[in-house]
Image 1 (cartoon, rainbow, N blue to C red):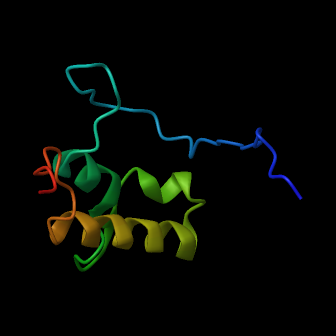
Image 2 (spheres, rainbow, N blue to C red; image 1 turned 180 degrees about the vertical axis):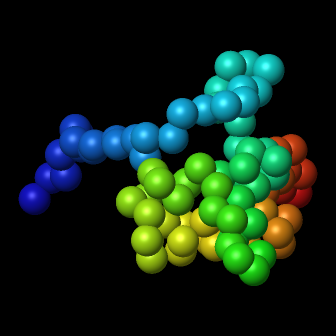
Length: 85
């Protein structure tokens, strides 16, 4: 069976409105932006960011904020990665 040359894909948005943009006009994904989405979910009491409502609030919203906070905290967001050797 010959593979199809065309593949159908569907892209959906999460509904997050970009607040900050890169110099080229793309939505920013820098560390500051990620923390705005996350809020401070580990504070007592937790303070959730913009992602909370987008993910439906409750447990799903809290989990999204916690995941985003963890991602930003470990330095996984690097806007200028070094090229691979």
